[in-house]
Length: 202
Length: 223
Image (cartoon, rainbow over all chains, first blue to last red; front, side):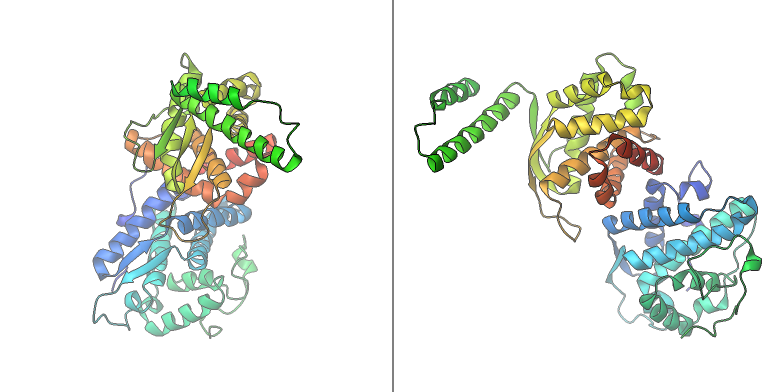
């Protein structure tokens, strides 16, 4: 199943990178994303708004704490910030699956881990929208994204350590993942030395 | 008539307690205290100063005015009290209160006191912090009954409900508005969610005007 496209994000009169830092847009855009996935997959989700509010507050603090001063680091920080969001969604679990269609294919990531799938789709779509709007770039999705074996590893690893979600989101969007210190943002990409493949993943 | 009866009843009970042995005297004092509180509430309600809300209520339209708008209209304390009443009677059920009392007169007094404190001369966040402290100190919200909530987790205590509803209301008064009343209502509920997510900070900062000002300033434009 292809990920729902960024046009499921609600309209806003401000740049998405700014709209994202407002709870009203965050709630609305997350709900729209879940609705779009639900319509495409038949999975019925329940959103816990209290946990979603926690996600936002925790994410905002992490975002503000590492926001770079150097404007040339903005593109890399866009990727990092969307990874932080995925980490927080996995930690605070704002989604619950109410039902999955009978006979759904468990080798499809959308049915194997419906909550994780919705979180990944949301973070990739927001990342793609900001990259397109601010940097005139198209997000390149990696083939790993539709590989169920990567999803087995993804779910197992982030369940034990949600911080690894930051590296996995980079992997899914064809960026160079930082597996050793994923929660630290490096303003200079040269600071990031290390393996870029999936060999370190269990 | 009810108010008169309560006053007369209180007068009858208001006899010296000293001759009564101590434990009984304590009980009697407690009864008198309770009786005074009930009489106060009946007084407020009969005079139209406090209103009971139910979580099925909320029929009256919600003001879309911000704190800044209210500052620039005549009889600002009355406009504030009305807007606060409508806001709180929507915020409280969302946070998990099934019923309670919201006093418009105490809200108006809180507004006047916050203005007279001179906090507004610093900035709008200082005024907002002073307002919140005055509203809590004056007991604008009373007699809350917690309800079963859709969201799981620990239900909020009566004290937490009161503080978080007022914090949400103040954030809402500060937040930028975009559309009409429907947007204003959705925004208020978002403020409630944010207030609950900031429960620890709100509780810690309430007694310190400067910290409360900083908290409101940090999150008002994040709504």
